[in-house]
Length: 212
Image (cartoon, rainbow, N blue to C red; front, side, top):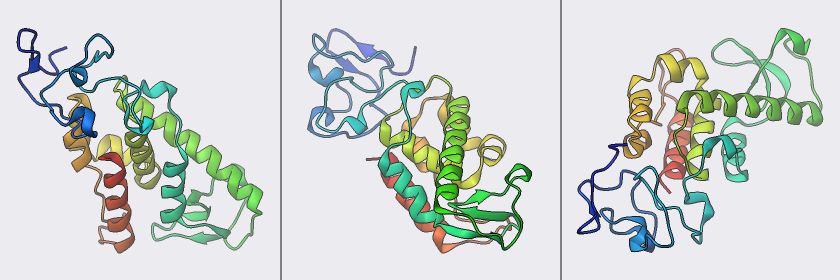
């Protein structure tokens, strides 16, 4: 699909693999399927599909992916969890793990929720973030780590910001430029345009996860 140009005579691509270094099997970024085309395949020209020691780095169809435990922990760590409805910096009533209160929740400022309610909100919000992300990336193949990092980004900044205010990230997705995608996960300002230390730390954490 013109993602990378390959010379079957020398067994090398003319352009390097934008996914980057994945361990000893893929140190040579101009090689094809870890130099073993009898055993491995590479339909996209991006990464070899083989049973690696770390399955989280293998490209997969994103419709088969769900957020892994590391991705959930990343969200939990940086969102925090508060069991009483409060007003966040964007003036939204919020509760649990960054859940924006909806009319159907029947909650008002100062109301308290149970741990089970918080868990239920988180599961539902995570499902929503996953669905929105999949609609954004289309048929782009992702590793578990890449998927988890992008779900965290969707959960953090919202689908509207990703779709309408992130042209560089969208262009990288369209071009299947994984290296550029990894550079576009940095969101350091809140909705008022102020830099926040928490957002800086979270951006760094998701970028490290994406590039692992």
